[in-house]
Image 1 (tube, rainbow, N blue to C red):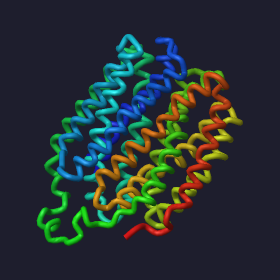
Image 2: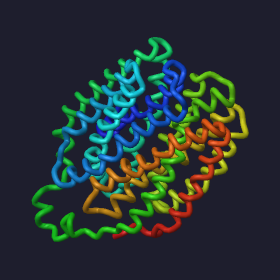
Image 3: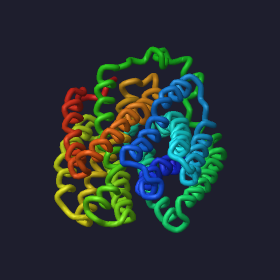
Image 4: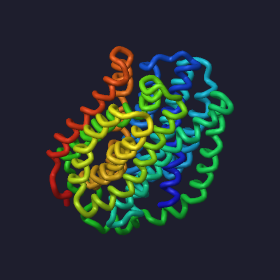
Length: 379
């Protein structure tokens, strides 16, 4: 699980790097906020739309090599994004990085499910916290590299990706020991194809994840710019605030997994939706440093349920855990990423202050959807 979570960290570090690059690309490449939002969209859609396809392959045949290959491609794409001279080439590099992310997640989530045993929410939270930490480290690593070396500093992002890919290649044989034995699969009458599937609750839960992702990627895309344009501070301080939010989300992930195992997945998911609107609204009322304190709670509430919803998806579709992970971590989050350019267009017209209020209202829809989910986990 440590290897899987670390691989998750170094994969999603590249997605966090996209958000950190936005203020610098706006300043040095002259991109509009809507164009900057399109980079977030490219990163999320390319890492999500094809992810269920990788999940289907993972359910039918193990392809562990996708894990190191995914990490490597994710890092290479972001490394080249900073030196790409035009917006179309930047968009292409970000898209290639996203495809690497898509290749990694379903296969890694499948092994994380095997390793977790009966405490799946806790185990999947530990796996997810690697991704949350990687997203948080993205701005923390990328910002000083760009400040010191300029946009070509992104080339250094290829180094950790290469190292982590090597670690995963070495660890794959040990990971495969956790796969269910073929004999057990053949002797069990409840084969994956015969396990009950609960598509209704699964679709409703995906709706919650999509709404949560609208709010999440809106914050990721525009918190740093909000600090710079509305609060009148530096882009570096804005990226620090973004890092604080993402890091607190990693802590929230570790806390919410055990809570979901104890009190139920639905209760924890609904509680996070209740907390977000007042927290995001409070963020708009305070200054930069008090805002960071509020972002700690925003990050914990927004990001903390990522692992919980992956487990919920795998429990609703127990015979298709790769597909469930691909949709939950990929497609639904990518659909949420569609909100980034839409929110950017609103920000170009109405300003970032109004846009934050729009983001604050989104979790209300998620709350209504979460209340339609069954109180007990399916059997």
